[in-house]
Length: 296
Image (cartoon, rainbow, N blue to C red; front, side, top):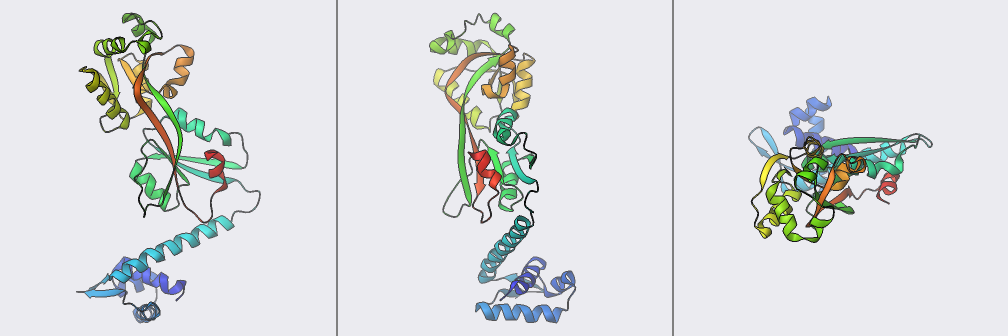
């Protein structure tokens, strides 16, 4: 068995026929057939069964295809890694959940700031898309606040990076309207209940972890909210809070600059609600050294 046999096998598996694989590889059908038989003899199992005019993978064939894919991914990664000449710029490819705080992302890549030998590529997307790119080695790290499920077969390494409080945040004008005394709300549960009941709210959308925690808080204190707006993007919630649509349920890190300048005010920390940030990686034979730099 060699890489040539595996390459032909993958082509047949993907095309579903000897003819299609031969056409794709620009070789004769008989040559493909001979090589597949050689591979089957080497492994001691039939890899395909005929279904009409098509070939379908047997159980042994599906197992062989999984291993063949892994072998070629490793070979491609090895080539890419060893092709990097000493002293060349290194690239770190980071995928971030589209709704994740931009300020947190900037803090994460801060250790690489100002380095002439490093290029950082940032991509945003949905969790399933990012995890697929991580497994295909198109990304080195995925930043998320939704840790992927792990089991014995899972390839993911989940690094817990940080945990942030979540607060009610709004404009100073709204603080004056409700007669907020700084720090008073945090010490008085009834004051927090009155504040939530009296104020229009800007909330994360229901499918987010933050919204689930806030809905549980509302249920505990028996308050029906007045929802002014919902958004699945922290940057949009930040803008809605600045536009004074209502009090935003948001981690202070997202509006760090506005809090520093006084454009927004932290009304109260929300008890038992936090946002946890994770960096997800996978086991690799040739690890990008920049990964450990940012994880540290």
